[in-house]
Image 1: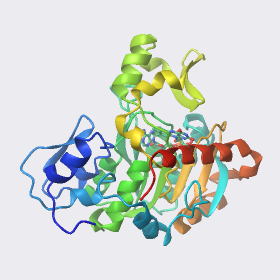
Image 2: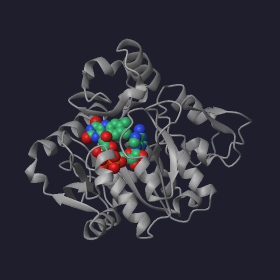
Image 3: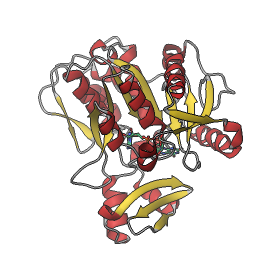
Image 4: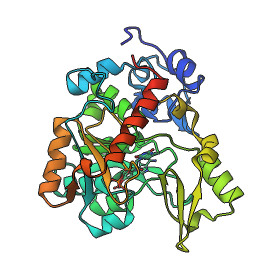
Length: 348
Ligand SMILES: Cc1cc2nc3c(=O)[nH]c(=O)nc-3n(C[C@H](O)[C@H](O)[C@H](O)COP(=O)(O)OP(=O)(O)OC[C@H]3O[C@@H](n4cnc5c(N)ncnc54)[C@H](O)[C@@H]3O)c2cc1C
């Protein structure tokens, strides 16, 4: 950790934003105590003179980042070489038992079922997640959900970036005392930096974080507006679901499903995703991914807290489980995708 108090321009502006490493998580914007930054077109922008308080570089997942220190903080030890998808306690396949969740969710509805259970059991009063955008179909929007109905409405994956940290800020501003968070691996890194700092205003309410496995996210203007709407002539309002299983599968209201080869979509991958070395959200309490499964979520229980909440949700009847040994290809894929990411960008 740097001891000198650096301003935004000489730290994040110079070394993260202008080098295209900014992941768009909005953490710097959220934590600035002087409101010097605004979130503008997916990037932080100085809107008044920086007070050089030195806080934003300490929470940015791309500035002065250390895998070893963060693993020590979360797990009390560093990952061993053979732990190819990070430190974990157990792996399991799971599925929500609620039919309404299964209808709207992405894979097995584990994220939605866990947050619903946690709200109903009084473990949390809200969750920072990603909701729907009324104006732009399939464009994700950070959302603070405080009821099971709101959690259900946000089920499913939108494959563009959603800075869910803005929803965490909303929860903190509303003085909500217990919150959960769901996000992509880069957002989980930011959450851990907030906790390590610690910025108690944000870290104290956080009860648990669910990390979504993630190969990449796509530019909304590129994949959705230019390609799907522009080139493929599909009205975005006619899409009922998108999923990635070898290719991008676009399900339509007509009942048809159209495939987009990943090789065609790659041109719209966000720049910072090319630099990512965490596929499976290795620093979350619970990781969730689809991994080619149909109707089930592949779950990695990583921390004691994550394992307890998951097991309590199973015991309460919110989730059913199966052994990962029943779908060996999924585990093989997890290993392959994890290794591919961190081999390109070795860890410090
Ligand atoms: C950009 C992106 C890329 C992904 N890539 C892969 C992949 O390559 N391989 C893989 O196995 N899994 C990937 N996933 C994870 C997968 O799509 C599912 O989210 C995961 O399996 C959990 O499914 P579920 O049915 O349990 O979740 P659900 O119960 O459907 O809940 C999903 C939760 O994710 C939140 N959410 C939706 N969109 C976003 C978003 N853009 N950013 C942050 N939060 C969001 C929702 O608010 C909801 O709470 C990706 C997810 C995202 C967001």
